[in-house]
Image (tube, rainbow, N blue to C red; front, side, top):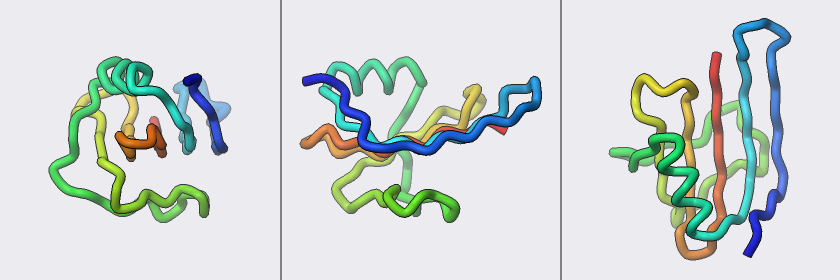
Length: 96
């Protein structure tokens, strides 16, 4: 199975400091998800949280999704909502 991008929203500041915000919905196979988690130092969140208030209407994690987050001190703040059964991912990344 290939990675399938369903939809996304991206904003980038014209400022030289590389400020951005990304929302993306994808379906991905297990090996790709594992590389994403390891490559971004993601860890299971201690508690679930709501999607950001300014998230697009389609960015709505359901109760089956596990939340992983970037470790403190990472370059970008990343929240990954993942359904490990279906491979459905909702990813929010921001660097301001």
